[in-house]
Image 1 (cartoon, rainbow, N blue to C red):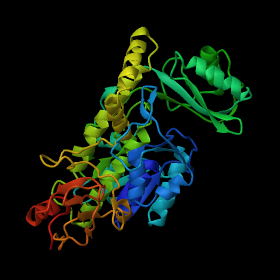
Image 2 (cartoon, one colour):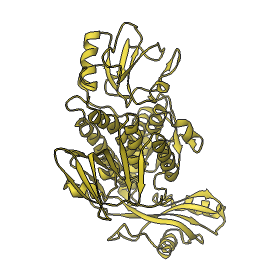
Image 3 (spheres, rainbow, N blue to C red):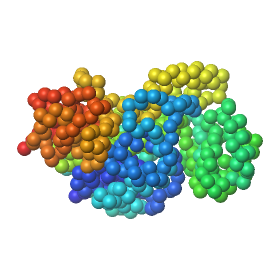
Length: 474
């Protein structure tokens, strides 16, 4: 029997596969498509995802094929300077096209021993107390101990589970594509600048070799957004908003997206879990979607591996929903707010002007930037030190960097006292005795996802936290 089947080979599913393999879990990824689409809906990694890649030793790979950017706020089309004192050592995002992100995560999962099967379309799901049966379109069946649906907004896994997906349907729609253009680049740039004075859902980003990533409002909402727009439809909308179609031709891909927001009522039903777009959909404002899914996988991977490997404490796997559902809900709320700011009516225009003024205040800019980049995410671990529940930034130690010590996906006790012990948990938790001028607490216990599970210097208190997050010892 397979330990875990992951339905969907996008960034979320591939990140999850790699996380599971760090712990020796037998994982099979089932991807409906026979080849990657090449579509680049997600355009990069925010600071928290950059931290995630660094914590797993992947950052150098991304830096080699990406460009750094710094954009504070990045909210509803409003961009401000990068705020000071952001709680991260990685004060930047990475402009990385989604196909590149998928390729890097695919390579990593394969290196770690994951099995990725393309052309496998999941059409049926059933479960019992011993496992999950997955039916494929060709009539074959696979059996696993757990299944994770990372199969997108139209998730078959979610539908088969009967999990509610409440929210609001799309009211506006936007066309997106990768096209060549014959118009002079300077003219395109000037036209875009003029149109964006009143319509922020319009843009043309140069991709090189005369090609552009073009976004333009659609004419209404399509009955079936799974059907790609035509080139003629793209040209018509460009002429409607810009007075010219820029001579666009030779599309590599064309797609459409709406402003609908929906979230699964539950992220877990028995042995089946949901992550990424299968668990939540929202407008792409702020560039949060791909990042949210990757961070779902980062939260879930070690917990599911603990369950498979038999040491998970009671409630650990359920904490995936408890922690990530509120994070998803907050993203849905902020994207709704951003779509309002992008409106062209007098009310949204006035609101955008006011919001832009507010973001000139450093504290507001920092708050919004931490929200969009997920640096501000804090899980509710109860009362305690202000670090409790937050992810710890990459602090400099006397003998290196913190994140360099987290590549294996294990828990970590960073002990500045030299008096503490993780005896009994050494197969799950690393004990690092070192000091950092950036950390003014005696010791911190970090979960594999880098969130602070305990702060202090009392060994007995530490034992309670080790048991809570890393189970009992034999």
